Image 1: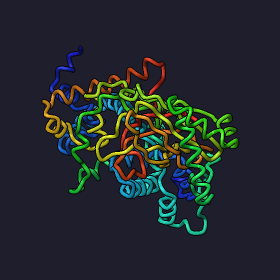
Image 2 (image 1 turned 180 degrees about the horizontal axis):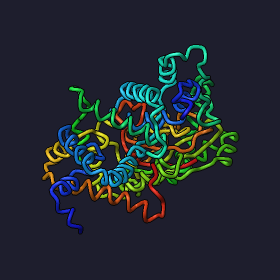
Image 3 (image 1 turned 135 degrees about the horizontal axis):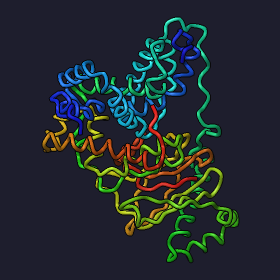
Image 4 (image 1 turned 120 degrees about the vertical axis):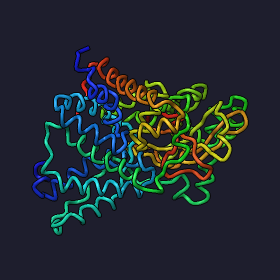
Length: 254
Length: 178
């Protein structure tokens, strides 16, 4: 270690530099530190280097899209824009179809049919003890059988406590999918599981669900998988959330 | 960038389209409310509009510059607002499970994922100190009080946490760029 490191200012510099780049100094401390920097410009490169590391933290948050209104407001507030306002930015990801709710367009009969499909699919795939019953239902509906034959499945995975959970997202039709899982622990009191469709990096609510006793779950995915990159599951307040408020429990890429 | 600096509204709009998402995500992480985050981002880009001419590429990328403005404005807001959103939830211990990769799976640039990976590799106590400082705007003294730790311990965790992030990138032969 060089002799200058023992100089009082240097000790203070060493003591403060990490907090400085994290903006964790008080105003007085920051002024003091910047005084050191001004007096010892040779230390600036070290601070810049450390600041680049701290700055990486800005990239870590989950990504969300600001509303189009923000863009409009911002551009209209820029003096002199007037008639030269550029067009709205194109969607960040092609193929982001208009969402069609699972029960959105087909009326009650379709909703009932869809619910039956999803319930049967979930149970059929999930609980072998119910397979016979499901097969009875399937035998009554050839269309349903064909859907099952053409289904696509995506394995759900999660870290930590979710490692023991087995689950899948099953795409039944273009606009219909169901999430099935086993060994899913009960949601904490006052909370519920919420599924999310990731589209262009933005999470869209895709339904709330609670596992049955034993942790079995068969829940419809509300929204089309088309154009989505992934399905994820978080724990949210009982009424659900417009945006995820907790870490991801389970997820799968589509 | 130079066009935006010279008052080209179209260039500025392009700048916004490229970087608003990252700025908003950081703002939302810091202030925790969508409207407050959008207000903050609007101020950030107004700053960018006013100061674009002073941007110097040798000091880092445009993204880094914009995010640093967002971070500084976010910290200022957190510290100046009496009703700042600092709930007890924010100082609860980190969950034993590491944050999931779920929302990061598909998305975007490699560096972003590497950063998240680096943070996941941090010991929870170091991550918590970095988060409280960087995202929540607490000073090191406040963090020491909140967590009931000696100030020296907080400083040490900051130092080790940043070192580990640097080592994470170094071990992969990737450069930390601005």
